[in-house]
Length: 82
Image (cartoon, rainbow, N blue to C red):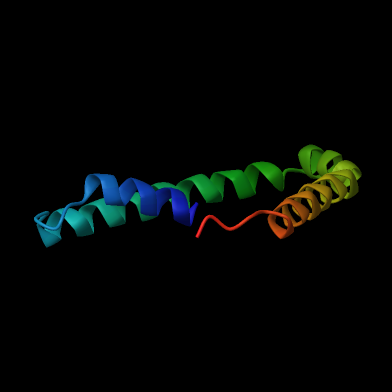
């Protein structure tokens, strides 16, 4: 999420952008992200959803681990462009 917002901010904010506008952009993003993350936390912690997620969590962790291992192997064998 941090990289996404960094990429978005570099497109929306220029060196000549007033400090007030930069602060307004930043506070807007913080507010939206706080609300979004709070809603996701409330939704995921609801009883039936939490039980279903807990039942498949180990498969999600295995799949995520496999993807990260594959990316690590790919990175280890990548050639440098420099």
